[in-house]
Image: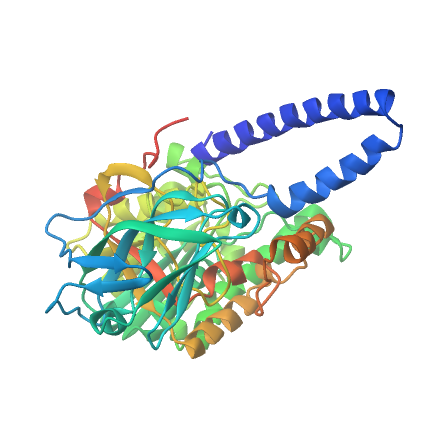
Length: 481
């Protein structure tokens, strides 16, 4: 069982215990006071839960985030005078550096009901970065793109439903412009490349998109058309395979640089456990990957027999890596992103690279988190503060890529073309969002209903520079539960 599954299991167990206690109290009130009172209180309690307590947050908002950055990372001296963030005299910053500021953020009373945020004002690129309700701990603001305002003494930090305090600490991480290099994005599923790295790959000098699975499971939406479970899964897989090849063309990626390997969703771990053993689809009644590989621009080793094995996956990856010889590989982060297919995807790439004669730069991304399902918190178009992490022994090197508003819109349109993000949300989720909008002030994304439009269409894309030794370490970033 993955760490996130363990956290969900514990969360649900605690919720069931809480519901049982609440039920006992309501029954007692109905007996002692009035029969109708429990019904009214239950309705009020349910609405309050949906508005304020439905987030999956598996740590206390009072916990300090704990980061360590690479040794010798420059730390320009800064001071917080009221709202003004001021550099020491004579200190200048590089415009395209990734700037991370550690500050103490404490929510106000209203910050327990409305999302607290820190507004970055005074420069030409105003921003806001949002944190957990009830936050009271060390947090890491992303000041990338604010170098000019900070250097000129114009940048101000304004707390909304929160207060910023303490002596701030700033890190300035310089990095090469990876957009000028040959970039390959590894996507475990169609849409992972766009969610994580559309801004990067759409601006890259040369880009490749390699998608590992067809993403055919959970096809209930297509069963509503009258298809049975197998037919719906096959249709969904064909559509998502098409998405993985066609949508990157919107960003100018050549057709011959888009590859779909066609393995089956949530089966990579089983393949890895028995490398020679074929592992078929959970729902599509298939043990042949070639149905989802028909539109590839060239033949791959796995096309010989279509067997969904780990060894075929490695052979396919070695073939594509040898053809492209990317300078930069963008792949799931080994400890931040807990999705089992994402973990196996990065492990497969590392295993394939060991047999090749060159070592590209590795950039990690996180489309999912262990501890906080809403991260990045806040609205579409806002900046991305660093995610929760609690292991100061693990040095991490963030890399931030700015996205113009035009590029954000293009990214949103790319996500809108993805069939998996198009079905409407279930009624309960839409009702929850209505309560959150009315009572908690949360705004829906203007780009689409799916939660990934809010999370992924931001003024930045955030990556992590990885060493291969670090990328191979898939242990939890917070310890086993």
